[in-house]
Length: 230
Image (cartoon, rainbow, N blue to C red):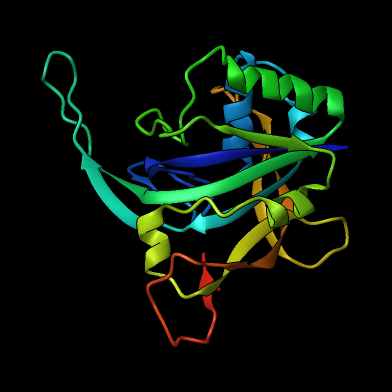
């Protein structure tokens, strides 16, 4: 098995899992359905194409810089301006940085790596209004996904690191094996077809990885700062 890591960083991101009608929420970290949708776009898959090869990948994400919640609202009118649609509220993560990854057969991981270098469709961080600030592809490795997420260098911005303690703990959210206790989330894509979108449940297990922070401007502070939620 081979692991692939990508960096998800930009002015805004939005990773919805249960948004409905006039309210569009975002999760605190990228969803599996959102990242697999990004990989599908890179490969040139259509919304009606099969997703089994992607849905079977193990998924994980590390919260390097949690960002802050931003609320926006939008008003829409018909082209003839005779009809006004309800006000919609949209939530985003501002200035967040994540390292997300998938694990699977080496041939598939190599194909996804090539697709990210030369994507068929434009790639965005959850919504079309959220382009990435940096190239997405970070690395591929023969290590497990969990080990790759633990070992890869911290990707937070320098200004953010300066505000953190000399030693921090980064949250890692991983797909859990069958029978393992964890949070249940319904975001494994079965179909992106707009006529009948379907998702399955997965178990999410939280881990932590400690990292040194030589950029810290906080001195004499021993307690560890836990980033990305409790």
